[in-house]
Image (cartoon, rainbow over all chains, first blue to last red; front, side, top):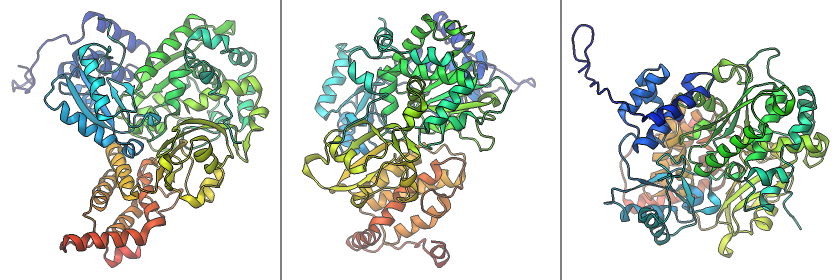
Length: 182
Length: 448
């Protein structure tokens, strides 16, 4: 329990966790060094934290704030603005289906609907609706962990996602940064 | 026979299997423009780009050389921020350029940095571009290895650091001042101009913000001269430009063409015309922000200035969305409104509140719950979002997102006003009367 100077409970729990692994902490420091001002590293560090933990944890927010000499509120404020950052656990595969206009007239909403039904009870797969992802020549298009695929039908999309699930295709990390080495 | 004029997309089409690798790029003469540029003075490069008439390819179409010349003299450090956030719906040209020809982009970035005398360049890349980030990151590392970036580039005494900065899913980071906020680690909220970024940009230092396509064009202008580039195109729209054509067309894709070609040639000859032999309903000429056009505008030339002055719309980001005659314009208007409501950053009240209400009302209109007065209602409060309800719109918000939310609704008024009113009346009659406050009291009507 953390307390104010007058002894009242601050309502925050100090966990003393070190969210970044030593290897990632090195990456974080390298990222910070690339910018003239530390604060610019908020986005790269949030990506790094999300890649490590699968989503942006409250501890990660605290540590990033610590590393950058910012308040956790500022880091959280930035984090919550961007749709790629998930602040609650998601599946190992994030399937982002576009339903913006070029996909809309080519069947995007049906694709989304099909996948949402199919993976409703599957904790490994999170299906989300996204705005235009800049691949309209492939409409209707979706991304699996930020890898583009299209044009797809409900069935071919499900086959694709199942291939990722079975390991037949190697998925990027949850922030789409790079292909997993393991 | 109309054809593409491939300049910045030539190499990536010639080497579809490895155009992003450093060896293939070098074999194609990548970084030759850089060598030439380093033998010139920065002023000569700015002059060459000004001569070329190159205008920003991100949407606003501002003269690139002119923008560079706005930097205050003797104020350092300066920064270059390359806008690769590409969020305008149906634009996918930067996506292609980053994934398939990253070295061309990097070369443009180095030349530009030298021209504006900055030693720190940022490439802000849309977060969703997983493969793009991988390839551009790799290309930057290779450019460091080969001495194109870093200290004393090619023994010229010029130093440059290039940082790849990934976004995280946010349309408004594509606005130049929103991008700067995001680059500083904050919410990507646009800032009031002036001061313009060239005077006070990232870290309150002079900053030039240029689009990926603009940067990719610079090496060619240096290699072949500003006069050569200016000899292409039409009027003040010089050179070539990539148009992303999508929607109900046979061959959606990116087409690099000389400006001045007509919409008809681009949509019918290059993109193959309307899919499944249907007729044209309407098309959107410059991304979701731009007012729409119809059949009678097909023979207008792709010229940034005449599209704005005569057609009252814009070429914007070069995204042309084509819809066949079975597509319901109301449905498209609602979906675009939904996009803007989602992407409004929430800083300015008219946009934050207005975009949400637009979406709600357009939803009921497009889904059978509309009311006869709905279109007037939208035009009434929309006049506070985009004063004048024309193009270019008046501004009540810091950035262009606010007034852009009204473009679809203004287009509905322009082409289908009576039709929509009749349809809403029919829908209301079919449902039976719902007692509602009309929202179109005399005071609101008078303002229309």
